[in-house]
Length: 301
Image (tube, rainbow, N blue to C red; front, top):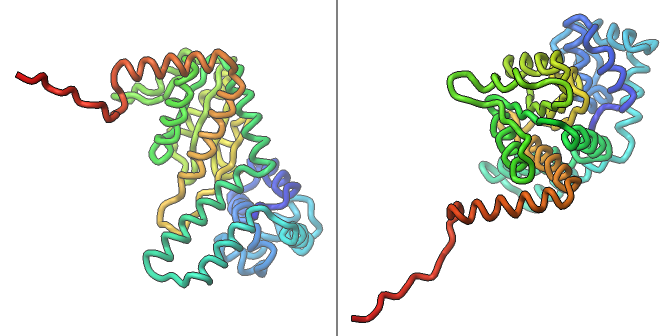
C-alpha cells in the first residue's frame, strides 16, 4: 500500500529542506509504509540506516507531537481497504493452491509483483496524474522524451507511438553525445517527458533541471514523490520498481507511458486518425512488417 495521502503530502513538501539523515528516514517512510505501521521505531531506523532518534526528529519536523502519533496515522491508513491488496491476496491463494518451488515460484512472484505495481499506478491518484500529464502534452508546441540506461527503452517507445499520430515529438538521443543538443531549441510552451527511477542517472536529472530553467513544463514518470525529477515536474506519474529480481522493474513505467500516450491519442480527434492512417500506408509501402503472401505459380512450359 502507499503512505497516507496527507502524510505523503507533508513529506513531499518538506523533503527538499530536510538534512540528509531526515531525508533517508523520510524516503523509508514513503517507500515502506506498511513497515511504519507494523515495525518498532528502532527496527524502522535500522532498516532506514539512521539512529532511532532520527525517526522521532522526522515526526516532529512534520508537525506530530511524537513518533507514536506519526505511526498511528499510517496504521489507520493500513486498515483501509486497498485495491492493490487484492492482488497480493490472490497471489497468496495461488501459491497455496499450487505449491511451487525453485524457478517456477520465483517467476510467479515476479509476475504477480509486476501486475500489482501496474494496478497500483493506475489507481485514482495515478489516473489523475496521467490525465494531468496528457493535458500538458496535448497542448505542447514540442514534446521531448528523455530516458537513460534502463529507462531509455521506455522513452524510445513512448516517442515512437506518439510519432504515429503527431510530428512534434523529439527523442533526446543521438550518437556522439549530441542527443541533448535539441534542447537548445526548446523553451516555454514545450514539454519534457522524463523517465527516471532509482538509481537516478545523473545526466537525466541535470537535463531535466536544465529544461525547467528554460521554462519547459516537465512530466516525470518516476518511482517516488521525492525523486529528483519529481521535484522539477508539473505532473508526476509514480511507478513502483521493487521486485523479487535483483534489478528494478521497468514494466510499470512502460505501462504508464503507454497509457499516457494512449490518452493523448484519444484526445486528438480526426487529426490523429488521419495521421495513423498515413503511417499505416507508409509502413505498408515499404513492406515494413512481414506477412505471408501467396506465392505466384510459375507458368507451365
